[in-house]
Length: 148
Image 1 (cartoon, rainbow, N blue to C red):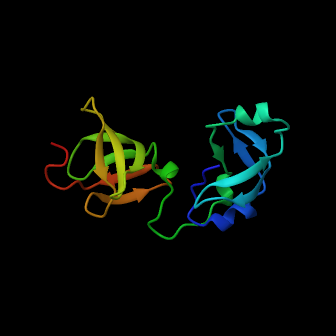
Image 2 (image 1 turned 180 degrees about the vertical axis):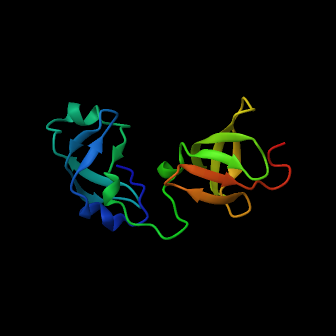
Image 3 (image 1 turned 30 degrees about the vertical axis):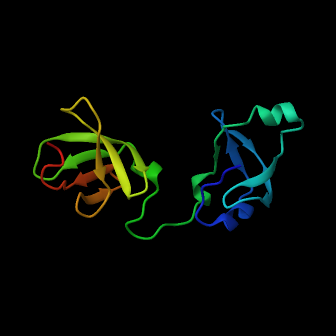
């Protein structure tokens, strides 16, 4: 398994995982760390090689309540998806479709009501004014020319 966690030691603290599109609730025992983020693991319901082969490429999820608490102004990508966008000084609105990091910083993929194509907005203090998760809103303060 290829694991995407900052602190790989956390793996051994989680007891229940959700597997694949069906979100099958299962136990996974992480046996050995073979490379940087690659683990050899045993999945409870997988009794033979054929069942294991069928799991290739499936995503494994955790219940969010087990994730570490974040500091102020830190967010999980999933919490940002679907936020309603307001743009400072504009009547333009939209929605956050996704969040990416291609190596040079986080980017919000946004869909604005008056544009067909999505655009990418750097997720930084210059372009994001306020995030209100309880009201599912984000205020963008895009630098001049970013939305033209």
